[in-house]
Amino acid sequence: MSAFKDTMIITQRQLRLLTRVPEVLIFSTIQPVMFVLLFRYVFGGSISTGQPGGYVQLLMPGIFVQTVAFTLAGTASGLAEDMKKGLIDRFRSLPISQSALVMGRTLGDSLLNIVVLAVMGIAGYVVGWRPTSGALNVAIGFIFLLLFGYALSWVGIFVGLSAKDARVVQNVSFIVTFPLTFLSNAFAPTTGMPRALQYFAEWNPVSTMVAGCRELFGLENQFGATAGSFPSENPLLTSFLYMLVIMAIFIPVSVRKYKRSAD
Image 1 (spheres, one colour):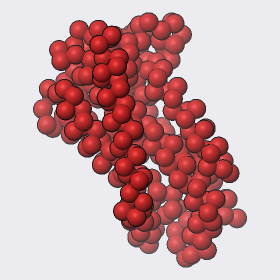
Image 2 (spheres, rainbow, N blue to C red):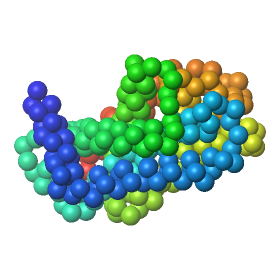
Image 3 (cartoon, helix red, strand yellow):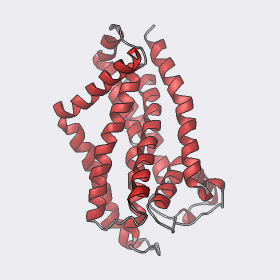
């Protein structure tokens, strides 16, 4: 119970930062909205989908997944910045649970995603996105997105603890997230990729999440299944397994790394 209480206090700190530094929230929402507008109106007219409602119906699940995937970069750079300022050393000197800091940061960043996804959903609706699966499935889709962002935030914790400089952390984070998001089915069909990249795209966790969200939002056209693999046929199950594996690996590794860095 003490560890839980400490974790909630750190989470509250993360949320208070949004009121004291509102630029964090503002720019966290502006970037994904810009992606929605750019892809909707710049690329939307050149990509044929055969999907009722047009490209925007396939685009929005990809933008949602890309945004929560960038939680990795935000968590990593924020933690590295706190370490640089000496704030982490201050927390270590206090009689609190050693795991509370990393647990609280991941929860705080996940709660920020709720606001970001809500703003993106409104922006998507304005530009023509209309899910057809009903309110319950749409809600499950957004919960799925939040869980995916939470899982990736633990990768961000590990990256943030591993690098010494916030600029290095940011570069490393984007090196990880950009290939995952763009070598996927998020924005364009995978059928035009070289065969090896097609298989990578199908097993890519971002692709399975995008396909799963499209399924939950009521879409039938998935930009094609190029390899007929297990992920392409079972995107929701595969995405859930990916999240479990990521958390099973990175939660204990990150907590252990944080405790060791305090010694």
